[in-house]
Length: 299
Image (tube, rainbow, N blue to C red):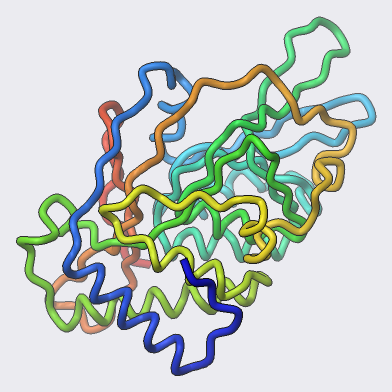
């Protein structure tokens, strides 16, 4: 896959147009869940939840963020943050992605707070009094979660973590994309949200290579997993040391059950009567269990 070192305006127009053309002629991939995924996979299929993981003594603790990003997630984070001194804290992510614009909103809030980010599953240590919680590194950060990871002032990805990217998609046309019809207004939504995502990526210090990699993966193909070189090339990681984001915390634990990758983020349809859409992508559940949230509400 050819990586773009830099993207000028003409290049962006070509990328956006190509993404639209691919999106409007493709089919949606489906994924089966691992029979051993258990509770961890189930949590990742639910709307994102935030929990404070206490780590004492001489250990500040961190924020655990698990699940898909929905229209309610930014408000849920504000409710969680109220009364807490979160400035400079670390967020540990385990997510299959979700709403494009709501992920952007949440990511900007993370950056304003100077938060640090990493990928993992928070595990409360039951080793007795004085035992500290740890972070299991074998977790998933997929689709829009990668852009939320990018919001960290300092960003670390453990070797066992899986960071995956792909295109986004129109939610109400996802079940039978080939047979669906698309209007000029649908194209406008696609172009608009690609533009928003591009601006956000550069504002967060990400590279055009990240967008190039994501926009080159159509929804009928498996998500592209970023290798160590690509994580650095795209500026998704800024440090190779876990201690830079989780000092005095063990980033190791018994291997967690494998979890299947999730379905693509998809652009939600815009109602005919609206002149300007404020809707965004929605997360769709790829396997059985909890139902997916509906399209994002108007803001």
